[in-house]
Image (cartoon, rainbow, N blue to C red):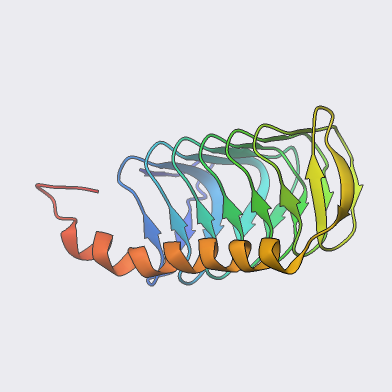
Length: 173
């Protein structure tokens, strides 16, 4: 569902996929080959929320910010994530059920472990493995983590055409 707020509605690239059961409100911009899956809510009522190329927001995740927010290219936002971050760098993976509080800035290639809670205004350099409550960097990512992140993002890009073809007015996906 794409909803206008104050005369401003979501902008979705024609190559992107937004599930009929997702809700985008206000100044949301979804880039090429990106996807937003069932139950996800992206609410841009305090600034622009932009999602780059080939990123995915998985089922039942919530994205909101108190100012402009940017999600880079090739980002995977796992199932049930609450993301209030200011900046998510290219190639990041936010594990299922993680929470990123207001003002968080992630450099490129960071991996947030499932269930982690990142405190307000935390800043992380590129390629950090971050986990815990509160979330802390525990080291640089290994090659296997970086490969996992790339595969996750690419797998969702590959799903887009299948879902677009299967969706219809009688069967909105």
